Length: 273
Image (cartoon, rainbow, N blue to C red; front, side):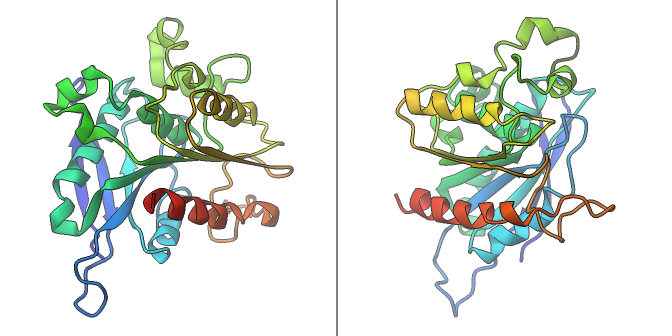
């Protein structure tokens, strides 16, 4: 495995985040010329931190499926929007520019995110082709295009069902000015990539309506989308097993552990389309 730490700096603020690579090494014994898709991961944490529980343990599962993975430790409060979005774009650009070196399929980069990291991934999914991103990075929009979104209990809406703390951390004193723009169910277009979402109906931190609103918006624009709502389970489950439970043992929810297998089936469809 190729494990590196790559600095990604936002051109707006000069804030630096870090991209941690989990790349499978090429072998002469096993399809030496194969280019693998990459799962670019954005852990959650309310835009106040990035969760370890939603980072390496999940990356290892994607590796076991045969994908490269990369975890973006993006800047959080007091850093403000669009710093983390620029760092995400910078990460996508870096992965595509280094595709040959690391045997990456540059057309198969999937953004994955949990909770507030799901908001970041989804925000990138609706904004990747907006001119301000490409202009700031000295790129063209097509270079920034993602192949899909894999969203785990994502923060989406700034409306009645919002996780307000995430938006306050993201926007600071521009909360009232930008909260509607960052309510992502209103930003979906036909150019938003295919998406897989899962949530729990009993999530009392980020209500399941967040995923429902985004899913409905995707369908309205004709974007291929898949949504799973589990009837039990709290927020921030990650893999929902003993590997990713909290230090007090909370977070094991056997009913929800199937999401990663469902996601694998969806990923196979996306990368083979």
